[in-house]
Length: 137
Image 1 (cartoon, helix red, strand yellow):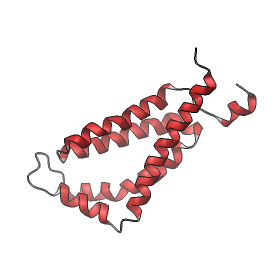
Image 2 (tube, rainbow, N blue to C red):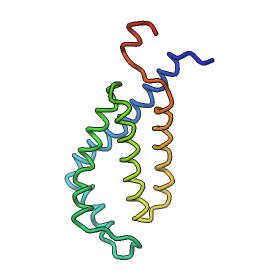
Image 3 (cartoon, rainbow, N blue to C red):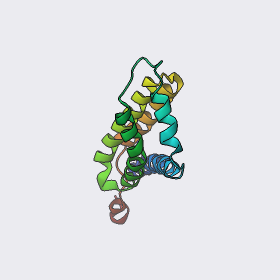
Image 4 (cartoon, rainbow, N blue to C red):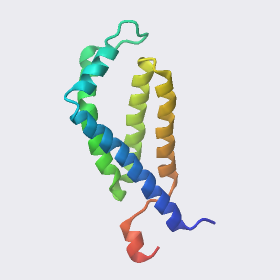
């Protein structure tokens, strides 16, 4: 049997990695000078795509993405919020997967699966909590 503390250590590393991914991505988008939203707006405006979305919808979501990434990244660092943040992680990653699917970026769609597996790993492991360290459990 694997020691619970070791499993909790793996869980906190996974959750911190998820937070780091989101905080880095969100921060880089904030400092892109609008380049992120402009680039992907142009990609979604391509009329050769099989699925087209209203420009205002894509522009709104592209504007909100950095805020979602930073807020979700910060929330992942709080153990008490783990159940909600994991489902938010899945939903956000699913939205990105759908976006890449619409853009017909098949390799990106496949690479998104790694993010889901990271969430699954974090989901099945016992939650790391500072309280557990203090009580010795």
